[in-house]
Image: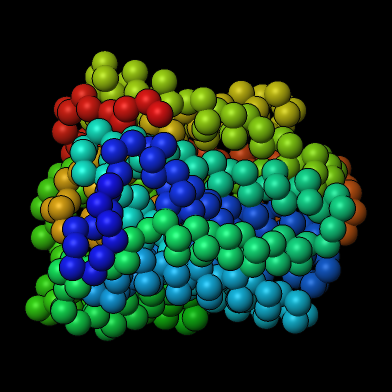
Length: 484
C-alpha cells in the first residue's frame, strides 16, 4: 500500500480485508442510494392516504427519483473524471443527507415528488463514482472483480431490502422517518470515504468540458417518454397533450443523438455501442430493471390492498426476493462457467419472462404461488445483472471506468422508470386512479387481479424480448467474478 500524495500513485490494496475501511464506506454509499430507490415503495399506500395522492402521483413519488437519477448518471460520471471522483462523491453524500432532512417540511404529494427528484440528483453524483472508486482500489483483475461482485450484491440487495426495511419501520414510526434516516447513514459513509479513499490525483483527471446540453436533452427525452404513459391515462391516448409528449420525447432523443455525434467532448461517446458487449449488456440491464421495478411496485399494492396486509407484513413478504438475491451467486456463476455469458443471460431472460407470466397467473392463487415465481424471477435478475455489469465495465477502456459504471447504472434506472411507469399507468387505466382507504371490496380486488394479470403478461413479453435481444450480442466468455 503506497502513501497518499497528490503526485504519488493512487493508493491500492492487496486484499479486500486490507481495504475494509474504504470498501465498507463505498458499499454503504452505494447501499443507501440503491435502497432509497425502493424504501418508500412499501409506504406508498400510507403516503397516499396521508397526502391524498392517487396512483399517478404515487407513481411519480418513485419515478421522480429514478428519472433524475438515471438522467444525470452519465453527467455525474463525466464530472467525476474532470473534477475528481472522491470530491464528487463527498459532495453527493453531503447533499443526499441534507436534502433528506427536507422531508420535515413536506405537506403535499407535489412537494414530496420534488424532494425525491432532488434526492435523485444527489444520488446520481454518488452511484458511478462508488463503483469506479472500488475498481481503482485494486490493481489486479481478480481483486477488482471480487470487489465489483461485492458492490453489485450490496446494491441489488439494497434495492430489494428497501420495502422490508420500510415495512418494519412503519410498524413503529411515521413514513417521514424513512427519508430522515438517510442523513446519519450518508454522514457515516462520508466519514469513511474521507478517511479511507485516497485524494484525487491531477494526472488522473481530464480537462475536457462537461456536456451540459447532452445531459439536459437526455433528461428531457426520459421525462417526456415516462410522462406519455401518464398523459395517456389522464387525457386520452389521442389527446394533444399525449401526442405532444410523444413528439417531445422523440425530438429530444433525436437531438441528443445528433448532439453527441457532432460534439468534440460528448457526455456519452456513441462509438462505445459498436461493441456488442457494451450494447448488449446495457440493453439487457434495461430489461432486468423493468422487471424488478414493475414487480416490486405491483406487489406492494397487491399485498397491502388486495390482501389487506400491514406494511411490515408486506415488507416481510419480499423475503424470497432478498434471500434469493443473496444466495443466488452459485447459480449465476455455474451458468456463466458452463455455458458462457451469452447463453447464461439468455437463460436468465427466459427465467424473467416465464416468472412474470407465472405471476400473472399467481396473483389469484395466493402468496405461495407468488413466492415461487419471486424466486425464479430473482435467479434471472441475479444472472443477467451480475454478468452484464462485469462484462460492460471490463469492455470499457481503463480510463473510462466511471463512464462504464455510469452507463450500466443509467440502463438500470431507465428500466426502473419504465417499469414503474408501466405498472402505475396500467393499474390506473385498468382498475382505478384513486386508492380507497381501508380494505378493498371484493369487486375492486377482482378488478385489481385482472389488471395485474394483464400487466404482468405485457411485462413478460416486453422484458423477455428486451433481455434476450441484449443477451444475444454478448460474447461466449466463461469468466465470472471470484467468490468472495
